Image (cartoon, rainbow, N blue to C red; front, side, top):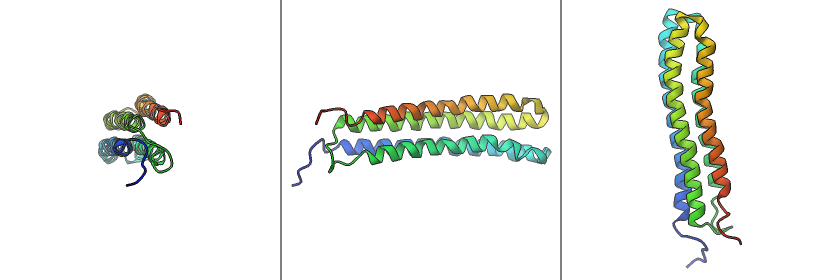
Length: 164
């Protein structure tokens, strides 16, 4: 029998948080990329000279997956029950960190996809709408940044459950 100190099931919740951060953020990135990519392809038929200018929503959606990757790496490096006791508090902190970042990334990806699709199509008909589309996309991306910031704060709480 090993001399494991801490809760036996706690790492499960920590790893679940890392997986949730990456999976949900990548789902948002994939949806945003696909939805806005359809708009770019549709718009490119009418105005092919605007395709490179209209790729902005696709790039912004792709960044969402990176946010999930960052949190997943932070969480997974914080789980080492052999080096330091890992309690349920730590597992729950990592789970909430992953869910905060992942679900914020999912919602931001949905917003970016919908705004990007409609925005690039509208931009093809009226070029003055480009700045407005970019501003809306920035606010949608900020939602994922809020999740990333809260995820980092929650993840930093792990390890503070008991004084050792």
